[in-house]
Length: 395
Ligand code: ARG
Image 1 (spheres, rainbow, N blue to C red):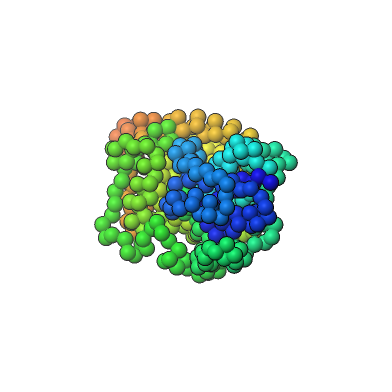
Image 2 (cartoon, rainbow, N blue to C red):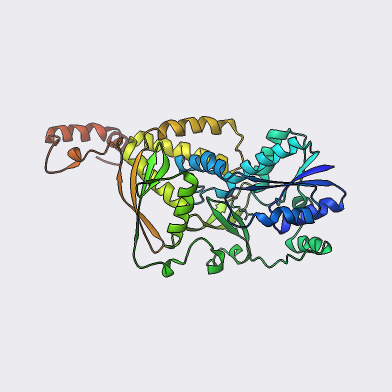
């Protein structure tokens, strides 16, 4: 068979490549970059060495940022209030690219390295079925053989490649989020060791001076930092660096996976957390209270679909129309202060702000009369007081 393999160059997918070759398949490897920092250069050579007949390296970083990440900002995408969705957003794009290669080379099957216990298999398989059809063959050797990392290393050793199983964690990285799982982190009471982190310094080692930043948004998308206009790829990378150096951007939480398991997840996502915090703050400046509450519901529905591997669900597009429409007014500047791992929004302004300083001031301008205020309160509380009375809770 001609098999297209989603290939990261890591231990598992390298072992799968070797395994597929041993089984006599012709393997085409595809590596999709979504802004991960690790080297992509050696990957093709490694794939060829393990017997790939063809290799594709696809740099999808810009597409990832412009289509997926920008929507995640507009939707304040934080799964269970914490996780900025990095892996969840990237998987559908990677799967789409792999499916396109499969079509192009006339593949009989697609292979990937997902396990049976994770969310990624759901995200991959669903998108592959969407593009290639329900009956297209998907080979998932880790899931089928319950391949352990030790076994994967043994397979590679048969091919004279010593990668070792020295890695302490399972790491998935892209420009939006670095996801760290496994090893000692599986004990939910154990504090993540410093060696789990790569993008952020320990807050206690961060500089003694705070960092001030001003982020400019247009229609919900960040476009400027400290007045300097830049594209979103550059902006996100820059914020990751600047904020990470101040110890900001670490996440440690318990997460509900799609497959019925709770997992302890550690992430680094300085830019994601800061941009969502700033974006939310600006929304508060602009939206009516009804809009704000409605938007939260829409955001949560969108975030759950993305996390839960339902990128292809038609409702996503409907939600995105609403999200875009509501972001029409989310334009302005947000001032951030970052200090030893903490971040505070310390200022905001927008041409569409409905914050009215002339109205809020106690000492001047509009002031409701005592009568107006009493009338409002009487009518406003009528439902609650009447119901409480009917239930004998008050006189
Ligand atoms: N829990 C996150 C998610 O489901 C991150 C998964 C990270 N994957 C990994 N192989 N380390 O999106």
